[in-house]
Image 1 (cartoon, each protein chain N blue to C red):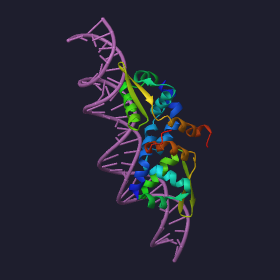
Image 2 (tube, protein in one colour):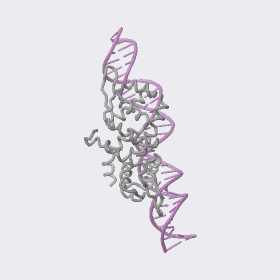
Image 3 (tube, rainbow over the protein chains, first blue to last red):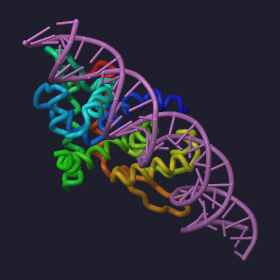
Image 4 (cartoon, chains in turn green, brown, yellow, purple):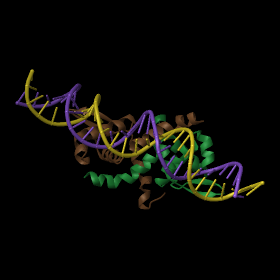
Length: 98
Length: 98
DNA sequence: CAACTATTTGGCTATTTGGTAGAATAGTAA
DNA sequence: TTACTATTCTACCAAATAGCCAAATAGTTG
């Protein structure tokens, strides 16, 4: 029984898990506006570059973002754009429980 | 800059984080069908009762479920029902990218 | 009361995560 | 080539997580 639960929900759970960090959620929303390089995301967040790079690799592993090289910098793109819709529901703390 | 990111996204991220585990995601979907006691959830999942109880407390802390006592058992309820809509998007691995 | 059931909590271990610093890699430009 | 910039990768550490067992708690029933 437990195995079938893992089969059915592990992929979906992995996507939620990847979104389950404030920095990564910010990155997703920023990429929702426009494709952005690592350096710019680093400036906006204020963490170490290596930390941002790790967060990006988590998002990439979950299939949420992908990237292309442009000159000497890597441009990240929101591949799974539907995750932007999820934020509507998650505003529940502001009194918008659906 | 980083502080404002945490302010804006930490609550939302916490909700995603709570959903970011296969067992908890299963529990959420089960509670979406009907209110369920811990014992029944434990039978369905197959983990130790204490493990299920801890998953439930994670979901409760995130504001996703709540509970009431009925006799000697605790009935859990899906409080934040809008999370059920999130699964539509998260089916992306089955080729339904929105 | 004692015995029983259901659930939570505390303790423990193993694993994962988030963060940093520094080395390694890839491209640009002199 | 060398120097430079941008990014990733490799330890490494502290903290958090997941799992189980056992003890504690809450209610029911005899």
